[in-house]
Length: 275
Image (cartoon, rainbow, N blue to C red; front, top):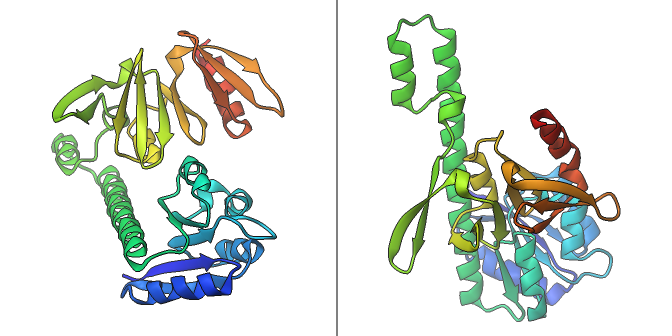
């Protein structure tokens, strides 16, 4: 299945180089070639895009500005292209799949594109699984079945809401595999292609997207408070006003986490319901 790619770079030579690499990938379909961040925003809002290659530095709107304008939740996976290695950390802070340092080599590009392809394949498989389970749940709910209906639903993997969430996490580290109970976790933090799991004074690392972890958590126990942070509601001590409408979430152990305006109202409603 073709991967619909948007390429945005204000340097014509760099753009042609990346186009040449893209054409070597048989499943890459360049549906938008943009010379500015503003043009990239317009195309991302109007065209179905699977993968965006964004130059970090563009005169009108840089790559980070493109994400801010479109909205992180509506962006496809991103590979950043930059002439400066200093941007790498910030690229991962906005959950970029990878970043390419100019001048980009064919091997390095192929590595990044392969990572993107694998990511899209996993996302497609997971999405298909969710759609099939939802469809089967609807069919089972609409059919008049006897007591075997529940068993059929369980066998199909369509479980009641309270049973669909993980009660423990699998941690792999230093050749060991061990488990952490979800209710023991204080908070989760996105870290590039990984998630940091904070349990008391210990931090574990799991290779997973934060959105995937969030989908496995009981929603009445955990809440997203920032694009990169999920917190165990039971660990919250208080909310402290910060600035520009943002708040600080103070945990019972003294940890301070940023609560963005996007998630503020939803969290306050949930905390009020528990009080």
